[in-house]
Length: 96
Image: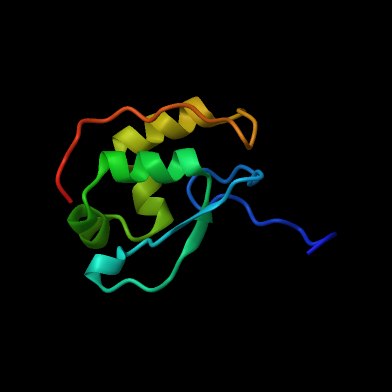
């Protein structure tokens, strides 16, 4: 809605850009229903770093996720980049 303040990204805290994705902090496959707004790159980084089982067990809250070493490194790197910044996500292919 015009004039409405836009919420920040759930993971990095930067303002959201034109593209927004919705992340389930507790994966749907693990019974999660809540969704939170994130940048596409933040969303891809979460899922490239952790399995759904790990997310459900250890990282359902943003503080726990941000404290994980791989995510903390990503957050330091992404800080200050424009809201619509995007690049390919690197990560080893894995099973969910």
